[in-house]
Image 1: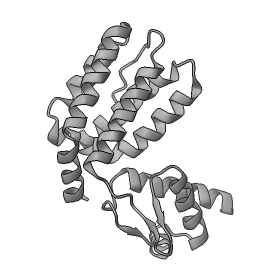
Image 2: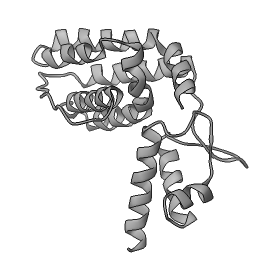
Image 3: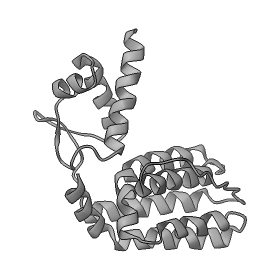
Length: 199
């Protein structure tokens, strides 16, 4: 296996673990230990951690190495607000959203993937390509929170149904997006507590 393939494998595997909430918020990410877990040398792991730092999925602290970002209620509220603002800025025309019922092992994984798919489809129709990349990046940063939403927001699937059903009607879609994000901003502190409990 060449070093490029190893680097890609390590990056993909490490990102999947981060998105899967495998590490508690604020925990240290030791490149040497991760290299052993990922059957790799340390260099591809460090490279992947640097890339993930650029994506804001990992933090670096001067002299302290790599860490999972700390999650706070106000920070999560801001991230949900940014998600809503970017999606609303993306809406310039009708957005066909198709249901995609992928196989997933937990309700949280289903909600997280479905949300990413729906919001990605909305942003992909924007006349500004930066909306799409911003929505994808924000979605990655919200992924861990979305994994636990079904525990705290019982009808999360119905909210996504409402967004999908409104995809032909931009004013109704705007309202559904605002409602979706408002509920999560109100639940941000509870979501943060659950993230720290489950990690």
